[in-house]
Image: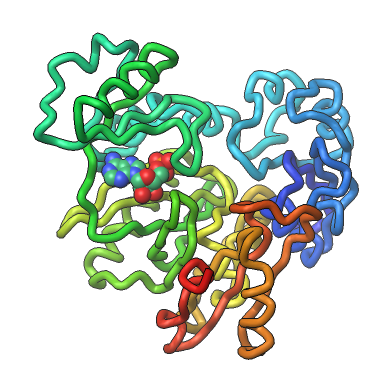
Length: 361
Ligand code: AMP
């Protein structure tokens, strides 16, 4: 127990960087695999510079590390299977396959985990979209490769349906009913292959399909919070989860519907670095190493604001005026528009009234 390990992280972005920082605090050594030499994780770890699909580079990482993990779900599961030894990737490649494909994911969530999702069906061509009842609204999502609203068409009219037909003929999709949700929430849960630990419920506000603000605890009833946490735990237990998983959900009246899962620390969990006694990155590292997991305490209500490329100056002046706000910058060289460059966490009762950088843009 607590012996020093070498942990290999596939992906050296901000999530890989923050995982590495937690691992280093615990005394471990970290090697990341990333195509970019000066990626955020290069500040805190050795980097093997190669494409994620480079089997030889993956093999080198596997040979040099005791345990492997990933910071994003679009890793080549077959390539990983070919290089890992038994138990070397505690999260397993099945979880990757489930979260890479919305058809597998919905099937897992409804038929295995037994949680509610918005009504959906699999669409293999535009023929499956004939006779659609356009008195309702739908979202067509590509089964693979979509993120932050990319690869999605909201269908409200005949004109939208034309666009959706093209997408449906190009690739496999799922068609979901559009949920008129009251708010979007997420729950972070971590496992060590035996037990799980769950974080407070997070309320998420998106702008242009990108997370803008997370408020913790979410402004929902205690009953709904308990229900959301129970759903996340059920999913984690069904997976024999190792490491951190984020469950994204919609709250609609008394109902909670699961939208999707991400098998890794998540942007909506960044507040946990300062606001909780253990962060989602700490429990990720403890979890993949199979170590005991702590119950999570929230020290104070918190708000996290994302700092995109166009917000860096606003974020700097915000913390200059509010020195108790925590500014994180990930060390990315180029501040592109809409690129996640950092975040700010504000703690305390007044936190939820903090304005998003979007509003002052
Ligand atoms: P996703 O890529 O599935 O996370 O979707 C991105 C965003 O689109 C979500 O955060 C929601 O704001 C919105 N969205 C996705 N699916 C639905 C749905 N079935 N009903 C309403 N809004 C949705």
